Image 1 (cartoon, rainbow, N blue to C red):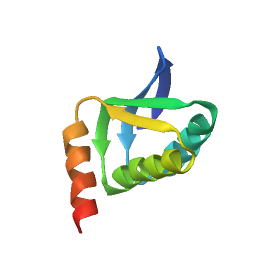
Image 2: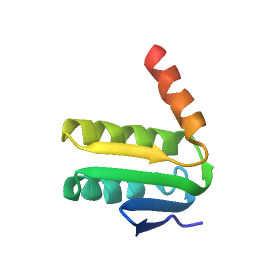
Image 3: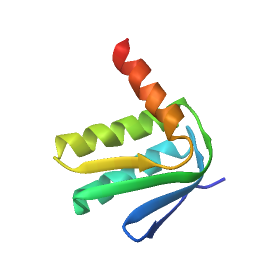
Length: 92
């Protein structure tokens, strides 16, 4: 399933699968968005599948936002799993 990204009230809604086949285009698209906006909010409620590559993509976008002094937030169901993955990778 293709990844669909829409914007609603300043929040970017992501629908579909964030996996090895969609992560590259996801990063490219959001890298551009991060350049254009000071504050980017990503809602992952519509993500039906996320794999390791998808998580790495979100980590990459977080690093890009930090490097550009921009705010990047992830909200929605599944954030707890992403948060735990971020914390586990920082501990190692």
